[in-house]
Image (cartoon, rainbow, N blue to C red):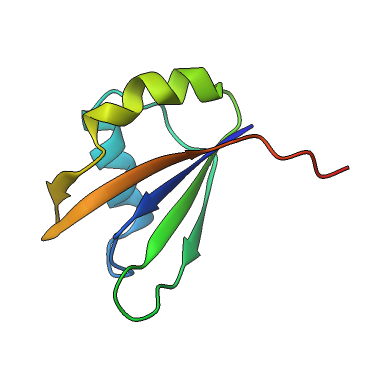
Length: 85
């Protein structure tokens, strides 16, 4: 499981729109999504990819990091694997 934080994504952008945006830049479909409310200015979406390695996402990340989309500059950060045992 690998996670990617997609920052500066308005809450009004649907999960489907995010999936279409990522597919346009070669990303595989995400397995699940969790919305993170910003402090009024920078909401985000945490995307979970069950079948993609962190290295695989790091290869794709530059395609969208700092890209202007939906009137915002999007950030994409790969979250290192966390041992939750």
